[in-house]
Length: 118
Image 1 (tube, rainbow, N blue to C red):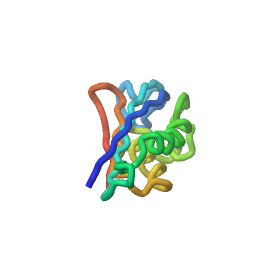
Image 2 (cartoon, helix red, strand yellow):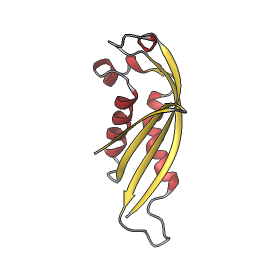
Image 3 (cartoon, rainbow, N blue to C red):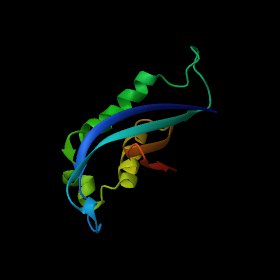
């Protein structure tokens, strides 16, 4: 089994509903996102999957989040835009077109991240 990873980033603002602290107020992050896929086999050129293909699949989702107030996106009107829920949103969105997705990790800072996988 092979695992292939890429990272990307986006910037956005959010506020955590029901959170009793500073994060309940509108604030922003420069989010870092890691996408991991798992593949059993390599193609004839020795690749599990092309990095460019992964980047393209991920960016299709991230551009919908980039420079947005996440609470105003339909999905996050119902689901609190926590790092955990953002990771799941990205995972589910990418998995629709890329079934090999294994996990998505979202960092809201250099020291805090959340990972979603099935």
